[in-house]
Image (cartoon, helix red, strand yellow):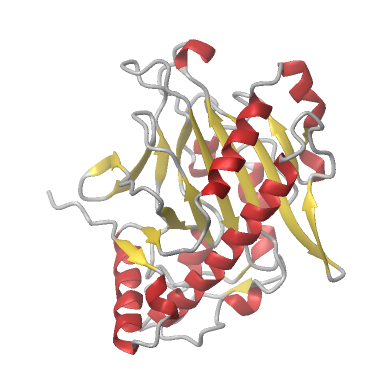
Length: 320
């Protein structure tokens, strides 16, 4: 069966003056988001040392004893540490699986009264570089995301600020997922994943990931589950449920999962750096009408939608 391709798009084409190249880029984005909801993004301009620095700092934190990490459990304060098997991501789509095989550090950019804070307020003293690296990563991913939203607006024939007028004040989230090796956590239970099958909930997700045998898989209707393509230095993009609604189901929220630790590579451990780009919580999401959209959904408030989705999967940072 034919498998829809996941193209690599070169974002430097968007900043150039070649209108034909810009139009071709927007068309490629539209085509892939209609087929799978996924893209690989090159030419994003992010210093390759930044993910390496952040990954190393996060790995230092995850290597701390459990009692030390437990001091940083603070879901009511915008994030912090989440221990193993505390989240069951597949529950968001109604799929029954054991809890996810991962630990995570969560942080949130939140703007109130004109000031942008990086939450949680309590960061590990044992790893002083973690907070500034997370902040730098969030700032860079936010800039790339807004550029991508401009491309996506063009792909829908909308003004350049159609999406970004709602993202001028940051409300994004950073999630650092650590997937331990089998020799650390033991063999997975039947049907257990590092992250269970799901779609993301918001606008778009940017992922800096490591290639692995127990890595990311995406789903398409024609061929089912298959390994997500990976390119050195490229970011993985997928859109979420809110963007699918906003596009009137023209685009699809990409269903995906992360495989359990592989039996043939029991020492494999991976760390994924995830940025969730969000619009202002009071943004009303109204589906684009035909001929752009394919289905008219009920208008929803972005923050209310996100809160309901997050409550379904387990303890999470607060979303306003």
